[in-house]
Amino acid sequence: MRRSRTAGLVLAALTTALSLATPAQAAAPTVDLQPQRLTRGADVAVPHIEDGDFVDGVRRVELPGTIARVIGRSGDAWLVGTNNVDVKRNRRVVRVEADGSVVDVLRNIDPSTVILSADGSTLAWQQFTSKGRKVTTLVASAADGTVLGSKGPGRYVDLLDVDAEQVVLSRDGRTYAWTFATGATRTIVRRTGSLASLQHGLLAYYTKDPYFGGCLRLVELDRPRVKRFASCRERVAALSPDGTQMLTMHLLTDGLGPGELKLRTVRGSKLATYTTGWFSDWQWESPGTLLLDVNGRRKSATVRCTLDACENATDPVKASAP
Image (cartoon, rainbow, N blue to C red; front, side, top):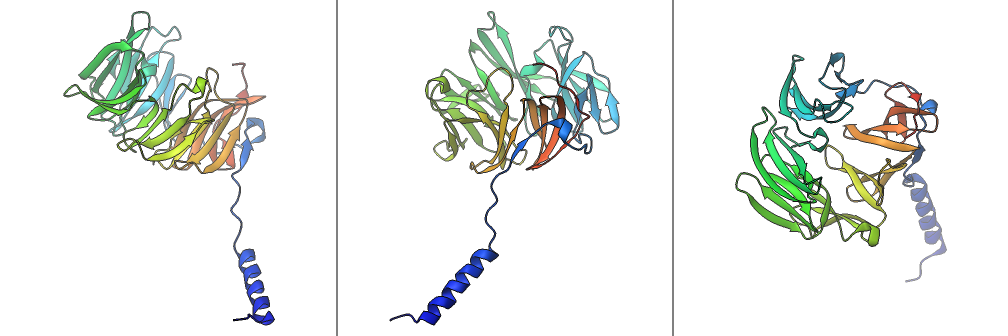
């Protein structure tokens, strides 16, 4: 049937009206973070370290040692790893209790290797022997440091995650789950793992050595054939607390922190890009709100970002050379 000219004009007008009424999807913003250009917002809301002390809101707790990092929450307490500048003194993990008391959990361990399960119940860490060529992975209660299991020593074993029952490890082109109560192991993929989240059921691994053409895959931990994200240019740096977002950086980033971070959904959709001189650390203050340790051209600060709305969460100080 032949369509009348009037009907065609009406259809064209409706199409135009609908296209004007439907906004185009906004492009993911790119934000260059230079603290001297940003306004000062609220202080960091999550527990953190300031001048070697544990700070939680108005509460400030002195810690053993001079260098510390917050490992995570365990019940009503917070676990903190601490040591002196010479690294070998005051090496321990402590619980900062709700009343401000500080209780030792682990001593004479490398606190930089310690990770905490998402439910706050279990710690895992690594001890190196044979001049660093062999490593033993240990698991303990986060409440009192009671050792629950150990595996090793072995060569070049990477510790990826822990929960109340198992640990995810990677070694010699294989990523596997170790059930520490029984000693059983289960291969997840025959590839080198980069990052794992037992809480959110996600695993990032390399298809082969990234310095020789390898790419990254983000897959479901229990169904590694189910791919969430893939890239031959980026790798996953961190997952958000709710498992819906991730930060990525250049695949071959090493040594000094990256100069660019991308915020993406776990399916890979880009939400924002952040650039600066270099980022020394990053975390989520809450789902959807990032805290980025920014080292800009002139100033450094912890910067809070929700997509392209960014502000200083600490007072900017003079940037120091890396």
